[in-house]
Image (cartoon, rainbow, N blue to C red; front, side, top):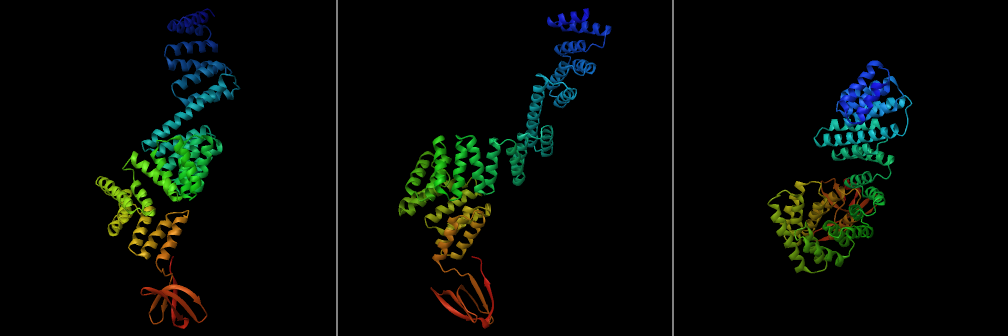
Amino acid sequence: MFYSNQGFDYYENASYEQAIDSFKKSLTLDPSVSTVHYNLAKAYDRAQLKEEAISEYRKSISLDPSFTWGYEALANIYFEKKLYDKAIAVLQEATANGVHNDEIDPLVNHVSSEYMANLINAAMTAFDNGDKVKARELLSKALQLNPNFALGYYTFGYFYYFEGKLDKAVEKLKKAIQLDPMFLPAHRLLGDIYFEKKDFSKAADAYKVALSINTNDAVLLNNLGICFMNLEDYHKAAKYLEEALNLDPGNINFQYSLASVYRDAGMLKESAEEYKSIINKEPDYPNVHNDLADIYAREGHKEKASRQYKEELDFCLEKLQAKPNDPFLLNGIACAYNGIGEYEKAKIYAKRALAAKPDYREAYLTLSNIENNLCDFKSSMGALKRANELSPDNPYFIKKAMDNVKQLKFFPTTVIHMKNNRRFEGIIKRQTKDSITLEMDIGSTVGTVRLLRRDIARIVSKEE
C-alpha cells in the first residue's frame, strides 16, 4: 500500500518516472490489484510509453472484468492512435461484461461516429485516387459497423453517380433518405440524377423535398425552374427562377434561364429586357445574341435581329479557333448563319455540331429550322423526329413544330406499290373494298388518284 500511495503522489506531481518505479514495487508485492495496474498504465501513458500503458490497462481489466476505468482508458488510447477497430473491440468487451455507465456508453457512440467518419474520408480519398475497389470495401466496413448509417449509403450513391451507374446510385440514395428523411444532400443528388435521366417530374419532386429542408437555396430554386421549363409549365418555371434570382441577383446563369422561360412563355418584352441586361454584363455569354435576335425577328425588327446574329457569329467564330469541335459553339454559329439567311453555311455547322455530339437535341432543332428555310421539309421532319427521340418527355413544342412542317408542305405517309412496278406516295383519304383514294403531290399542286385494289401489290406505311 505504501508504494502504491507513493506512486500516486509522484503521479500527481507529474513525476512519472518515479511514479512508475513505485507502482512496479507495489505490484512486486501484490500483482493481483487491478487498480495498481491501472495507475501504472496511466503513468506510462503520461510518459508517452503507449505500448507499456496498453499492456497494463489490459492487465487491469483482465483482473477485474467489471473495471470501468480500465476499459475506458484502453479504448481512449486506441482511439488516440486511430486504432478504431481495437477501440471498438474493447468497448464491445466492456458491454459484454455488463459495463454500462455515463462514461462508457457515450464513448461507444463517439468512437463509432469518428471511426465511420474516418472510413468515409478514406473511401473518398481512395475513390479520388482511382482505387474504386478499396473505396467500396471501406464503405462496406462502415455499413457493417452501423447498418443504419445514412451517410454511408449516400456516399455509395455518390460514387455510383460519378461512375455513371445511375440506377444503382438512385437505390443507395433512396436507402439514405429512408434512414434520414431530412438528409438534404441525398435529395439534391437524387434530383440531379433524375434531371440527367431527363425525368423532369421526378427531378422536380426531389428538388421540392430538398427545398422544404432548405427554403433559401437559390440553386435548388433554379433547378426546379429548369425542370418546369422542360415540362413546359412556364408559369411555375418563372416563379421558381424569379425566387432564385431574388436570392442571388448577380447570378447571370439564373438570369439567362429566366429570360429563356419568359421567351418560351411568349413574354417577349420581358425576355428581351433580361437578354439585354445579360449582354451588358457579359457580351460573350453563350447564345444570348442569338436569343435576342430571335425575339427581334419574331417582332419584325429585321435589322436589329441581323445585328445580334452577327454579334453571335463574331464571338463564336473567335472562340472556335481554340475549340474547333465544340458542339455548342458550332450550333451557335449555325443558328446565327440561319438567322442572317446563309442557310448552306448554317447547315454545314449544324452537321459539324452533330458530328461532335450525336445526341445534341438542340442541334437537331437547329438543323430542322435550316432545312425548313431550304424548303427540304422531309429532312426537316427527320431532324425533328430525332430531336423528339432525344426528349423522353415528348415536349409539346416539338410536336407543334412537326405539325408546322406538315402544313408547310404536303408530307406523304403511305407508299403504294403497284403490280406494274409503279409506286405512289401520299396520304390515304378514302378506302373501299375495291379501291383506295390517295392524296398526293402532283407537280406544284396536291391532287388525288383512285387506285384499284386488284392492281395493288402492297401498301407500306411510312413513319411520321
